Each structure stands twice: as structure tokens, then as C-alpha cells.
Length: 156
Image 1 (cartoon, rainbow, N blue to C red):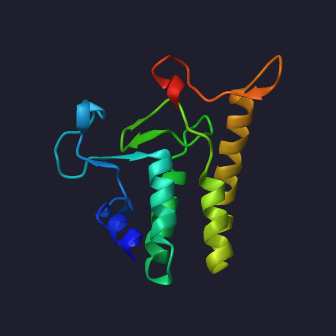
Image 2: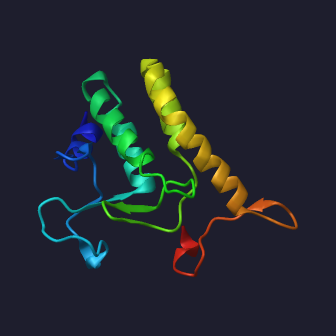
């Protein structure tokens, strides 16, 4: 209950997107240049939001909240096929962290057996895993490398 209560402090209802668990409320560092007011700005981070969804779903009372948060972060998937490390309403990061969303979905499915959630998210999660394998497997040893397109993103 304590973990779930802690995660609940981050929840926000956004009438445009449902329940979300932003890491940051507002527009820190001017990260989202299209923000015109302070009414609804937020930032979702990949792993943080996935794990918040899992924590929220740990008991039946938070199941729907966890589902909503998981759906929001997975559906933030970029056109390139990855879930961005940072997502705001009009901006997405150009890099991603290792794809943990499938594991979070698996744990939720094992707990509640809601097949509809798997059907809703599986294709997006497969895209993300495929993107990660294709973009982050490097010759000559075919090892997976974490990172991005520049030094700033290399730590992700």
C-alpha cells in the first residue's frame, strides 16, 4: 500500500489523455517549446512511467490506474517504432531506454489475466523491441549497445 500511495501522488487527470503519471509537471527547461500556458504541461519518462504503472497495479484497487498509465506511455511510441525516453504533448526524445514495457505488461497480465490489454499493446511493444534489436545491435560481435545518436543521449 505504501508504494502504491507514493505512486498516487504523481497521478494527474488530463482531460485530453486520461490518467497519466508524469515524472515532471510543468515545462521544465523549456523542453516542450509549444507549451503556451501552464494548464496541462507534463513530461513522461520511459522507465519511470512504466514502473509507476506496475506499482499502481499491484493490487486490484489500482489496476485501472496502472492500466491507464501503461497505455499512455506505450502509445507515446514514435513513428520510428520506439517508446521515447522523454515524452511531452508536442515533443518526443530521439532516443529510448531498453524496452521494459513488455515485462511490465507480462506482470500485469499474470496478475489479472486481462487479454484485452495484451491485444491493445502487443504490436507497439513488438515494434519497440524490434527497433531496439535493429538499432542497438552492433557489429562485429553483435552486442547490444545502450545509447543514442549523440553523446548526451549515449547514457540512455
